[in-house]
Length: 226
Image (cartoon, rainbow, N blue to C red; front, side, top):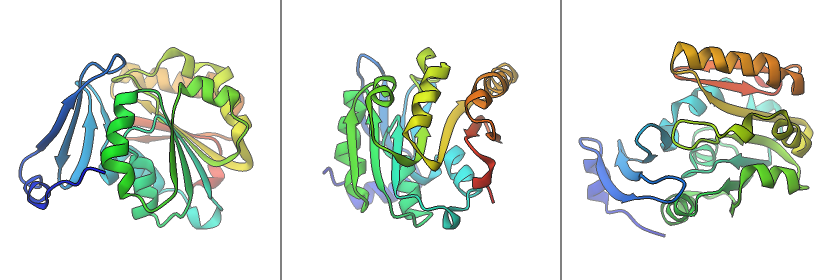
């Protein structure tokens, strides 16, 4: 565990504080900083994690009635620095066991050093390709979160119906899947809507598209919304 000095946390409310600049074969440029007291991980074109300021998921989670649904096992595909478990634990009082899948070993190193030790919940991170993981896993989950980007692009295999079918197989009968997609331009918004209508709803017939700022969140069933 890497402990950050308190002065640096306080100063981050005034100026962004750089912690590390690093990179990998998958992500040649990765920046880890402190901003407004939160850990933020970003590439030149995308924010991968920002604790409870990862607004697209935070805003969606506010619309979900967690009290009505027993969520104990959570799978996060594209773990980043663990914004999803951080928010669910700290902001939505969800007690669960988390499995994170992260293909980039450098992102996994950062998460293990800086983010995971801040969680009270059980959290296991697997270094694996998410496509292969959902194809091979036999575990069942109450909630699956799909947040799979390389920079600001979703790799093509994660757009395939086969991938969604495999995710569906990992859900318990009353489980929830959330798929984060970009809608930052009219073109991306239209592509997301086409994907939702032509692919996502063919797998999840009662799915819903929720637009939040520059993202669209696809959820597997509207019953989870308040």
